[in-house]
Length: 321
Image (cartoon, rainbow, N blue to C red; front, side, top):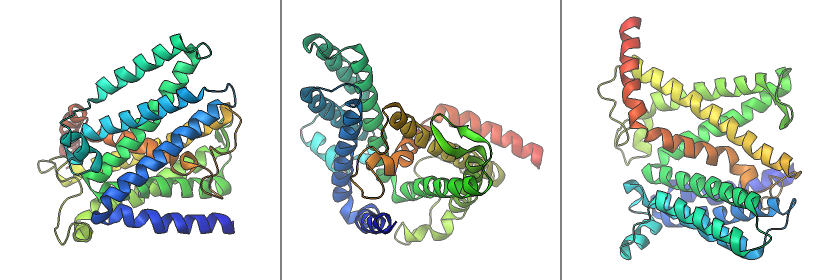
């Protein structure tokens, strides 16, 4: 327990400044890339438990994962101030995400032909690893580029869901949620964690304009400003939207945790690695936040879904009023 607490303190001392201090954004990006590289090798080394992966394939997966990460960052104008975006822009190189995924697929197919021990199942494993790690870490980077408030909200949801799911599960858990994946998780814990996360997350969104100056140099702005235009929505409609978003985020957080647990159980490992003593590996510590960041970013850019939702919220508001 002492080791776990000490590791948490050290992690907080390193990560919190580079997340919140704008002048350290380049350092934040470098740390994210380092963590991504570690996470990549965690998954590839996990695959070794079943079948040894050739070193040249691991190196290729690392390069392709980094390429996909760069394509995600390069795909969003909000990331124009990031180090990767500036480097690509300096060389006048536009890395399209669909193009990068196609490259990943072609490279893995070629490996299946030229490397005798690399078969079709290995292609699926590597493809999953590259998409999982590259897109999740890229999404986390994009959210930070949009604003630190999105990272704060993400961490509020994932951490509160994780903590209170454990608390409610230990005290009230009777119905197992996924006994073959994570025997300790219960429906009571999941519902309790989501309920608390909903209360905390909704309060953060609803009252954000009151403490926004802390994050915006004295400027008072709405949480969704420069992402969505909610000026036409009523307060009731916006509140319903906040509730649904927070519930969705909390559920995705638990799904992300279960995905990581399923991988570990499939390959019969306790932790992905021991990078963080007492906490395990990068994916052990950040699995929920990474998975949820991809879903969060996807949601923020699903305008074709949001537009109809606005109409639905307005109709619900009329009925309520």
